[in-house]
Length: 415
Image 1 (cartoon, rainbow, N blue to C red):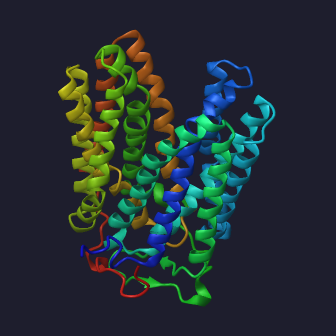
Image 2 (cartoon, helix red, strand yellow):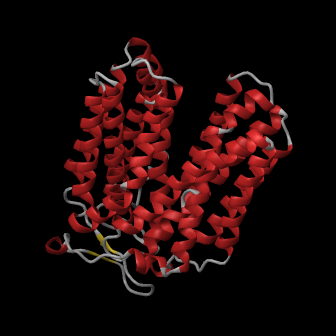
């Protein structure tokens, strides 16, 4: 039998991955219904899109506040509260009787999402050591990726039955995720992240709620953290922003292909990324954060250059596959860097890191969309490649943060 990918990791990693799957499935279920439900109140496409934007904008705006709450009250408490806010607001959104109610409730959901994301990532970094952090990050990402692939399949069917039903299903999935977290994370062994060369330790039970934390100023003073934030911005710009917003239009308008090839391209990308996440995590833990960030940024940049230079269908499919390959490496290593530089709680440190990706996902589609409308699709893809290449250059100059003396897996509490 093949070994479990969780072998040698604390059981809390498996719990957090399960929570990620449940949250992502629920989000995928509700995603197809949101614009259609908004339109059912008699509003136009712009207003329907504003419902989606409200979630993203409030998530971005409240991230630092969520980080402060994590530093003040701990990761586990804020994780439970954040999921609870999203669950309640989503359930109430399914009962909304007006567009305004729906808009407000989705904005509240964005606040809860920020609290959950920051606390979950911060907790993940504190339950693993430096030598396991890349693999744990890859598995956590894989949970969201698997959930994101499964959710829309059910979401399309449920939306056909009722526009309100997906909201209730999402709320139930969030309650399940929150229950998993409360039940299995209450006794998590939190790790005091240490200075290079210092032996790794776990907090004894009486110190698990220690308030030692890394401030944002302390983190920003380190070149490695600034590089991780910059790379995460590039990821948000290219992978979460331009890939999601511009590639579908590129396929139909510039390539002249049917919409089915949009799905085929995204499937190639998702399968490649999911297949390599575990290997990428192991690479990050064995070879280092810097090589993975350089490799991932370079491969992804080359893929966007290929999209800029050709409208041939085979080139498109290969490029989308390469984006998935690069994404597996560049998406795993920066988070491991953040975990490496944290000492104790680091809610605001994680929040700023996450905000960089969200900011890229907001600004990337706007800039690339303007270029596509006023110059060309090629110009938009070249700009995305340049953002990734800038991240690669910063990665080349970054000091390595992997601690070789802390590279052994946990002997206690394994999954």
